[in-house]
Amino acid sequence: MLQIKSSKSFMISSQKLNRRSRISFDKAKSVLKRIFPIFILIPIIVFFNTLLTVKKINCILNTGICPQEIQIVTNKLLSSNSLFINQKELLVFTKAIYPVDKMKIDYKIFNTLNINFTGSSPYLQSDVYLVRTMPVLSMDMAPSATDSAGWWTKPSGELSNYLISKDKLSFNLWENGSMTPIATTSANVKYIFSEKPTAEIITSIYKMIKLVQKYLGVSEIYVVNRRVFLSRPEQPDIIIGVPFDEGSLISALQSINYLATIKKDTKVIDLSFKNPIIR
Image (cartoon, rainbow, N blue to C red):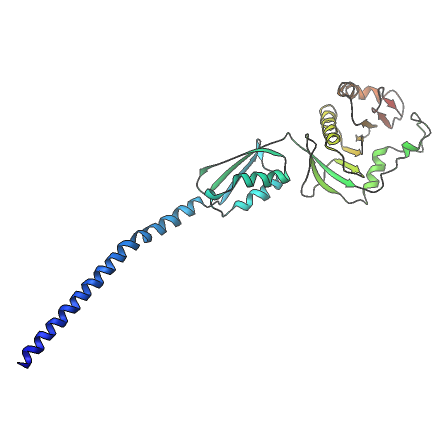
């Protein structure tokens, strides 16, 4: 009898164990069903995140490659997810350092971000000198505007010597009158002023220099407040005032080679007045 009772007890215990095992298995199976999609989803998320991560940026301004100033801003998007780029914020940051008008972003290739900016007309690179005391030119100390005495020299030489000991900053000058700082460079436009010029003055200087470059080959351009000095090798300096009359200036520039021969040893041709003054 004792053996029979022991056998029944073992069977009951075995049945309970099997039932518990089935319950545990069913629970594990249920949990596995719930978390299995997660195991599948995680690799998919990682895969697509890898595809959408920005590894290369093609930055275009108008029809050319973006200048360094814009690239510094856009390169901050590297390693970010292209789906979460704040385009409005990017345009605001870019406008703060460069005069762009519009921006378009597209993704033609995975991992590559194409950013196209539309900006203002081409700029003029300029070395800018903010000084306390403006340079004094020997020609301005002459007794009269027509004086050609040998004791005063060409202003371009004096201005070149004046700037040797001065600190400069590099800027781009734009037709809309804005000035944007750029990395240090050496430009043939030297802008000297004691107070920051207005946008109207910068616009006038920009248009005048562009006009000069259309008609003349100029090695150095010195802008001293509202006077512009054009330096040409082995030729008289040319002086132009700002603001200027475009029609009169074009006519004078077209006749500049003839004007240089009117007077022997001409040092300066001053176009700041209605009629050119040759000195």
